[in-house]
Image (cartoon, rainbow, N blue to C red; front, side, top):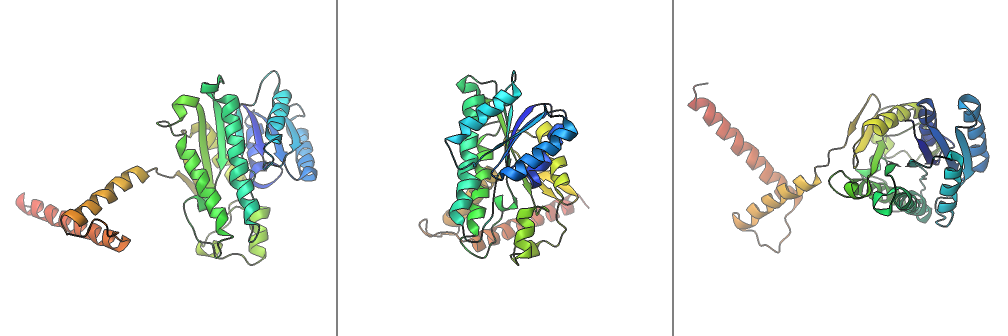
Length: 304
């Protein structure tokens, strides 16, 4: 954790948990937030606890692409003679109606910061390499909101998953030497979640009969991700446990491709006719029964 971190959305909630974890681990923090009052209060509080030479704040709207280099330069100046070594793209919102703002902050702002980080730290651009931590969500893997406007949140978080996977150790990472990882918590006890639940927007939350995660738990998972996560990995955080989401998509595509080939070449379905999920499930069941039968025959053959 002993690095120079630039943390967006760091004034409260998950971002603040990141800042506290970094500072407790010996690192330095330049935090930004659109809420200037809260940002200043957070910065002053952290400075009293960890030292004024280790934390600073600047107001930032992550959707303002022209301001990103200015913020990064200010962070470099604060860390001087060092520079920014890690970016935490944490700023994010949820809205039932303002879907454009959700996309602009959660995806466009995150991508702008990411590309600037690659420009400043990427090995192919003459940089030393570095670290990017993307704050994602369980929405990176699941869909389930009631309206298309709300579902833009899902769209943005699944975009974050794709971006993180693009920097896996066998993809773009060897070119840039910037380790990119993501963290996907369930529901966290933050202002964003509390506001929605209190307003009655709890359709998705009600599907998971579990408690809210505390920001401190996300901070601990963040520490594990920063110190041990491989580039391209997404750490899923639930109450009581966490795990890296398996990157099995390529294998699943191959498996489904074989199943579809069997459906068309052996069972005679027309190649232009789409194969349904129900047909794939039926093929899977047939394969399980077939393998079980072979195993049963084998056991009888050896006398068991």
